[in-house]
Length: 330
Ligand code: SAM
Ligand code: SF4
View 1 (tube, rainbow, N blue to C red):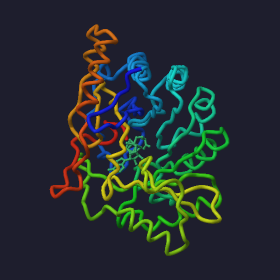
View 2: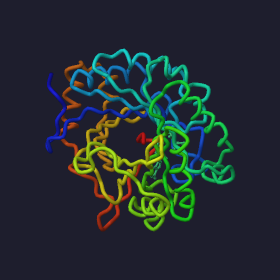
View 3: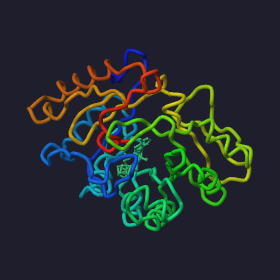
């Protein structure tokens, strides 16, 4: 098998697929109230087109697939799609990122379909603030979704929090304390710059060091995993009396590009080798233009060869990315 290895010797074994650019929420840091310019329906890849790409990737060493969006659970047929991915030889980790609104309804079916685990995005445990952030009144649904995911055996259940200064930083400790009662993996994610008219400002970004400091003022954090080797994006910890874990993802203050093993496929069929690089490689035209698997493979290998060494969002210019996370697939 020829593996997907880039020019910096990083082996690419993880594909994130945004299966839709549509969403049932309007998080203030991700989308303006009126939504964003959506792709024409016909330009969104069909499930069989995604599956063809997954098969080709799996034949070249991709083992991990994450489905995201937009909101993946609003696309019809997602469970069958998951079942089909789970059946592809070589795929051994299948996960999904969701806002959790529909998770209570879907958790069991997803698990039976072959999904291994979920990441649920939740930025506030306060009803009013949740509503202010997402512009919808769904906190209870998301909390029930988390419970149901745990009961269904989607494990681990990860909870992603985007921490924003003056917005939800007073809840940092509350989220960490959840790990004493629940086996959740709490993940604090630094607020990243996307240029989509939602007013990102550098001084609203709280760094991992600050977040960790807030938690450690309350209780010591015990490191987990190998911090030096940097095997994944999160630096992981736990409380001595915790049953879950606490992790920090620092794309802004301490990028993990050196160990980046990811490739992204947007809902409209563009490959992105870096979340923050606006260079996209069109695979939709190839899929629909009668290209053979071999030809698509070549597109894939060329894309991987061009994967940039790192992102530049925290350099002097603080470069913003021109597509929002909901289009790229966070
Ligand atoms: N709708 C699903 C959800 O919210 O989980 C999946 C797509 S959403 C784009 C994926 C993740 O991107 C969410 O955890 C969201 O909080 C995160 N996200 C969106 N904009 C972000 C930003 N500017 N900085 C950091 N994370 C962001
Ligand atoms: Fe939708 Fe997720 Fe963006 Fe919120 S973060 S608007 S749930 S895509």
